[in-house]
Image (cartoon, rainbow over all chains, first blue to last red; front, top):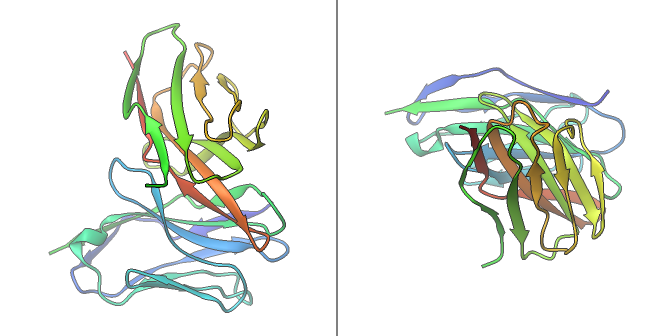
Length: 113
Length: 114
């Protein structure tokens, strides 16, 4: 069946380090891909998305490129801040109307000063 | 301000009691969803509704019920049949654009059992 696999956390980085959180998916067709961020005690916020192959989603310094050939949507940021500490969820939904969203299990990021 | 509101932020349930979690959106979204999140885990779909007066079970619907009488509202009732209700509950709504759906989330309600 369809699934999303994220790298396991927690990931601990020093401030200004480079961040990569891996995400791969298995799906048929042409899914849309998303990254959500969840700060402690809060709901999920949409961070970025991409709807077709080779699209790059970007927001707040974060980027992810939809790679259909490797079925990946890795999240990157060039220089993390303490305020980026949160849990990051990769997700996808199939195209063609309302479809169930499949979420990864989340990757906790801790950035230390 | 447009958005999704959930209330209350914290809710306490006694044994054998039904409790209802509120979810309201003023985004004019057609579809709404309820998820459950347990500590350190991902999201599991409880119920969803794509149109008023219609809803479908998700992956873990047992012990829960919903209604969708208005487009803006999708309340979730946690019944006494749900034996392990302690969790963080997230409501979402979604919009279709170009055939692609994007979900947006509310701030969540944390349910605790007394």
